[in-house]
Length: 417
Ligand code: PLP
Image (cartoon, rainbow, N blue to C red; front, side):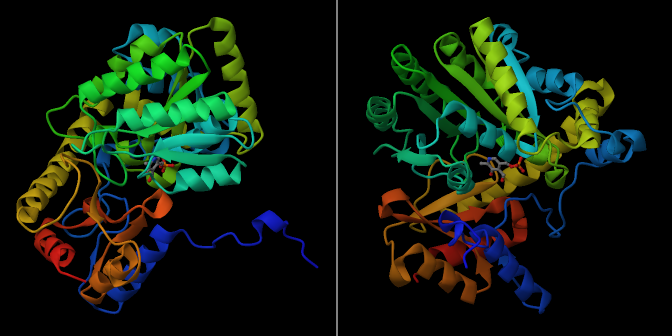
């Protein structure tokens, strides 16, 4: 007798990234020298998890009563106000149109966006390289995921491909939810320029004049983008969409405050019309009740304090800047060492990951074959295949690689299979 429903009979039990990391950890525990560039957490040069000390202190200092009690279903008003300010503080018009709901990490925010801005059976639209849980989240809520080619021949965001895909999708399903992960895209490491953001917004705005278009900006890594570029500079390009498209932000404390396990995040929705805005707020809160109920109250309190208390905020920002400097030096070393080694990858200025493109899709020259060959030299990366099998790639989590291991990593990437 089959009790598990037919459509869930063949769910993969292991997340592919976690299984690569598990194998690397097991070999390390057996005493082997391993470079594990598989997992998206920031490690210091001794291989220890980088934890912002002030964030850890904020968590420790949350009173017991706040861990014990339920948070309001949508999240505490202080937390929601602080998160909206964090993203939209410099954009009064977007801020005035914003409502938000607390979620368990950015993952929860992505889940709520997919479940509320697409009907069952409809598909979200994202770049051809994407964080694989997007598909899992869509699948889990009976939605699909379609993609458009991410890069044009010049290596820039392929806005023409987005435009064509949106036209097709709007004709087929009458609405669209476009998911863009930027700055510091996972897995490619790409950050769009301001002119790419402007073109993206113009493209969405043109379609939004005819059909409901929602943009979800997954900004999980926005504080780790290119040094010297303001992490919120992109937001102003979304202002013209107000009143035409709905603009959502999936905000996450996981990377910004190095507390991945605290499970704190939020979905922010900028909705021009006040009536629609109230309906969106109600639908998001209803979704929370119908899924996880409410979020970790203590976690919301700690993150609120880090966002609002001027001294805590200054301290945590300075500590994060130091982490970003470590990451930037790894990125610079990677770019230097990769020169002349025949590695193809997008413009890489910062962020947790970079992706090396390879031509093969299957066999020894494909991503799985290449990743296995690298494993035999003790170097672990995550193999990827582009949607439609049009190319392969290796995702490299530089965030987890000590500076001294970058040369070994580049050598392994550059060696033939
Ligand atoms: N978006 C991207 C692209 C990510 O890589 C991650 C985490 O790895 C998230 C969102 C969400 O992370 P969390 O649910 O821990 O906030």
